[in-house]
Amino acid sequence: MPFSVSHDQSVGIISIKGKFLGAKEGEAFKEAVNSLRDSGTKYAVLDLSGADLMDSTGIGLTIRTLSTLQAAGGDVVIAALNARIKNLFLMTRLLGTVFKDYETVDEAVASFGVTSS
Amino acid sequence: MGPEQVSRLEAENQRLRRAVEELSVLNELAAAIGGSRSSEEVVEQVVKKSVKTIGAEQGLVTLVDDTQVDPTQTYVRTVSSSGDRAILSPNQSLVGWMLLNKKPLILNSPHSDSRFGGTKWDPSIRSIICAPLLIHGKLLGVLTLYNKKRGEGFTEDDKRLLSILSLQSAQVLDAARLYEEEKKLTQIQEQLRLARTIQMRLLPNEMPQIEGYDIAGTSKPAQSVGGDLFDVVQVEPDFVAFWIGDVSGKGLPASLTMANTQAVLRTNAMARIDPAKCISRTDELLCQYTPKSTFVTGVVGCFDPATGKCEYSNAGHVKPIVIRNHGQSVERLETSSLVMGFNASIPRTSEMTNLASGDTLFLCTDGIDEAMNEHRQLFDDDNAIDFLKQNHHLSASDQVEGIVSMVNQFASGVPQTDDITLLIVKRN
Image (tube, rainbow over all chains, first blue to last red; front, top):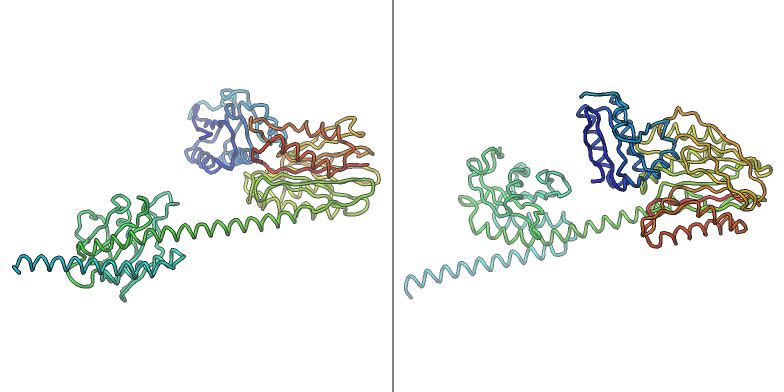
């Protein structure tokens, strides 16, 4: 699997690894995000420290993740973008206007200010 | 001849008669299903022959759908009944048992059989015989017969005969299913070919001939159809509209959004709507009608050929580049806004630039710098810019071709993963 889900306190951490090419992993990824929401996790960090490539379908999935958790009253931030993926987010103008990004997962988790589940 | 010999001869005679009967049934079945090309026909013949040969009231084949997550969630392809009774439905407990045991089974007292304690059988069922349809150890389905017409119930001879029938049937059924799958695949390929033809017609076949300008573009989908779009339309002598766009994702889903976006942009451009408003309107429609995970990046622009005055608006797309003054300098048009399809309330602005004599406007989709070679290195679009600077004297179509071959050469056989689209507007 190119992604895994864990928790830091009440924040879900979705770690994406290698090539995040959405067409391949799309359905499993959507299900994982829905499960997070259904289990009551409203805040999530997309940890991209292990991701080296992302395509537009991958970006579409990150947008869908944000929409899903925002609709549940939560939010999603991005952590540890490499230069190439950051350029993609900058080009699409999603960074800043839609997604906030942080250098590390810890900073991203702390940004929510939630401490217990 | 002693009584022992007589009895042995009688037994031998009976065995031979059974063997002849079995051979004759198999022969009939082979003749009946041999010419069947569809699994429906095969199943129907198998059920009819089995019901008649074994002497049952009803029979059915339950096919196990291996695409289901739960293999016991099955569907019946055909039911053949030899009597007037209501047709019995397939029993999930029987299919479940067969998935585990994969061997023939007789239930002459199903209502009291301890192996099926929790099963609610139809009250009309007195006896059951079933056999697996196996191919290479995989269960294709179950052939079940209900209610032996004569005698106390199904016999071991019936079981043996049904096993032979099911073995023979499974092979023919498997061949018929493979044939059907192949046919479906061919149909899908044909539909994709048609979809490609339709999509190619949505893209410009030739560029407008405008005095003092040389325009060329191309779009190469990574699959049969793609999500990239572009066009150049001379709406009026002083208004030439152009755009390039990239729908997230690839293949058929992206191509549907592509067709829609192309139509919306064309309609707005034909009405001389300014670029920012074109993007806003497209954005509104995409937000309304596409899923949250689908978005479109794009640059929409227009220029007056006489003055070279050019207006453009960028929605999260690769920045347009202007190679100035016959390759002397390069300008990236930096201003951009959010992609379309996510938030229609985002304000859009049109920016101004100028196309002077000797300038080349270069637009592309990110398929260019996502092209990868066998060493997993990515093509840098700076290479395309250098090419344009060095080859400013070439015609726009030669420049387009040159960049496409550079990308192909770089990838050297590694399959294209993203759609590639280029648009070049040169002012002579």
